[in-house]
Image (tube, rainbow, N blue to C red; front, side):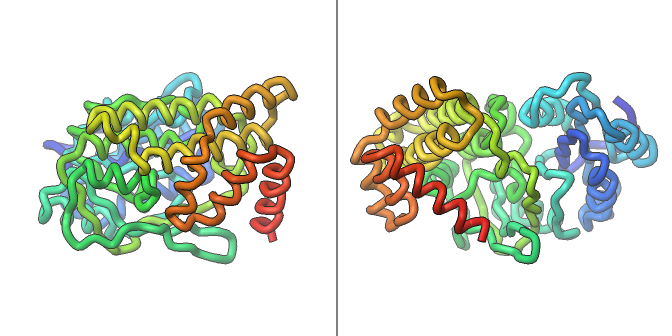
Length: 338
C-alpha cells in the first residue's frame, strides 16, 4: 500500500476497483478529489484497488496516492474480479460510509455532500439517489421509487425483488458497518445485485433523494453488454439473494416478489445467456432444459400481473417453444440495435 493516511476517521470511503483502467483512473481520482464534501480536510478517502492490471493502472494509482494524502492505492497481483477487489477495498476502508464508483463513469461534484446530508438528516443506513444511463448520443434516467420518507431495509429489499429499486451499487451510499454482515459474491455479472440485496437486508433505514448524482456510461465492451458465460454467476447471485431473503423472513421465498425476481434475473437471464452465449451444444441443451424445468406457469403469470408485457412474451415463449423464444430474443436484439 502507498499513500499517507489522512488524520482522523474519514466521513466517506470511496471504493474504486480498477482493472486495466489507465484511460479513466486519473480523471476519476481528480473528480473525486473535487467533491464538495472533500473541502473538509480528511472527510473523504479514496481507496483504489488495482485488480491485477497489465496496463499503466498501477503507475497512475501509485502516483495519485503519493501525491494526495486522501488517496490510498492497493494492488492485487492476479486478476480475481470486481467482487474480490471491492472486498479488499472495504477491508482497508475507514470511513463511516461507503460509496462504490466505477472509474469510467461520471458523477456530480456535490454527490457525496448531498448523500451524506441525507444520511445525517434521516439517520439512514442506506441513501439512494437519482441516476442516469449515458449511451452514445442519449441519456436515459434510471427508474427509481420516489419516496419522501425513509423506509425499512426489509421494505427496500422487497422493492429490489419487485424491480422498483435497482441493484446498482453506485447510486447508493452505505453505512460501512453493514458491510461486515455480507459476503462478496464472486459473480462476473450482477455482483452489484448480490451486494445490494445483502446490504439492504442488513439495513434498518433506507432513504431516497431525487437528485440525479451519478451517470453510468454504457460502453460497447462492458460486461453487461458482452456475450460472456454467465450461468455460474447467475447461480451465485440467486444464492446470495435467497440467503438475504431468508435472513429477513423465510416467507419471502414463497412470495410473488421473490418469484418475479427469479423470473427476471435467474430464469430469463439464464435462458438468454444459454441461447446466445459461447456454450457448446451439450452445455447449452443442459442449461436450457434445467431452466425451463424451473419456469412454471405461475412465474410466467407474475409478469402479466405486473403488466410486464415484454417479459410475459419472453417467459411464455420460453415455456412453450425454444425455437420461438430464440426468434423473440433475436427480434429484441435487432430492435435494440436499431
